[in-house]
Length: 559
Image (cartoon, helix red, strand yellow):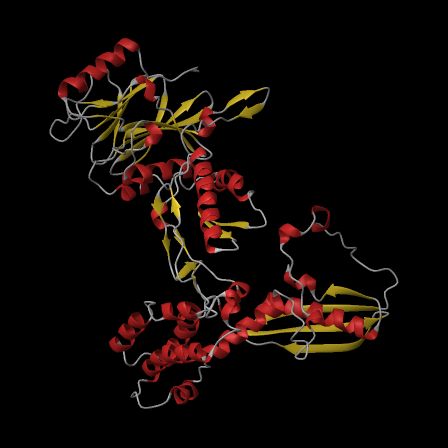
């Protein structure tokens, strides 16, 4: 028997006997198909039995009960958890799932939501109803709480649609409180409808984009773009996530002050026009004096004698001697002294000391791996920028920082010098590693010619961001074989029992004339071996100035 609609009612009765009985009376008068009750009235720990002879399904804690009143519906029990019960209806040649939930107000929301995460709401026709006891602006409250934010993230991640209409009134009323704890959620395939065999899916988003939504980044880029397009010769605006950095230029301190206050007022107004609030208490400023300006000062001072007063909406902004941006601290003298001062404050020494003291027999190889992968990487963050301009005082500061870990590493007294500790441990000095990072950055990223005495940078691979490649050039069609090739080179790379290598066999007129075998390091992968084999074949063809076809060796063995 087919049905055009399924009609039901959802209600949280708060353990009230009269309300529980009244729901069945209303369902019988309205000829409803199902009832979803949360926090029901219980008799000896069990929900009361109706006089309709309907099918009843309950959660394990008996706080969520689903009654199927229509006896002509094909209904099957799906599963139940502590706070949820799910049933499956066969409706109009499709499977329709009804989830009934009751989330106690004082339980852990994340544990409650975890009961539903294993179910795929994306490709199913599902109705999710319940008393979730969560507050969020998305369904009528004036504010959000932690439970509401977690529920909103789950709704967005599960591709569910909120069906509550706040204009119809609250779902909970008492003498002291009014709220919307009850929710009705539909999976988007249910909300879609067919028009000429084309499915249309709508999802209203009238208030805001839920946190974690897939479109949140795109919406943010659209919003912030109206701020970023205001660049001009004396103003540069740089954004990173939701942080803005302004570079403002002025010939004098007075001009810089007036120009900065004017620009900040304009940006603040534009953000308010976008309904975005600027966090003034987190804003900081630092003033840099140009080299040309220093020459005009009496004592060739690198900083201003008096800091300018910068305000936003009559709220003063702190003008600091240094500014931390993206993990690097830059001082107002355009030096890295302030950055090195912050390295001592990193919470690396305490964790290292605690582990070493608790286990003196720890393998030194493990400690060295920890040092190279965690401590050294943290201390040398941004070394590709500051590693090439170190002064003697800054090098000494790096020595003193590194000495703390070297002493703990070899468990020695404080008498050995830092250089001796480096030799005994085999760990290079930090300033040399920083200089190496700086040189690699200059070669690989900046393509600097100042290191051509070491090797020719033109021999290095050129890395181009994929987004910068024109669309027509992203797909390259290569012919399988070169006509009239002089040689055939069969290559293959393999890895067996932690041994990696590759081979290349050169044939001419189907006669094997050369064989080349190479062994790689144990940490090389089979993919690296394949690439190395291709590189060898190409270099051999270039060296001999011949045409070759490169073919996989023993390709049939791989399938």
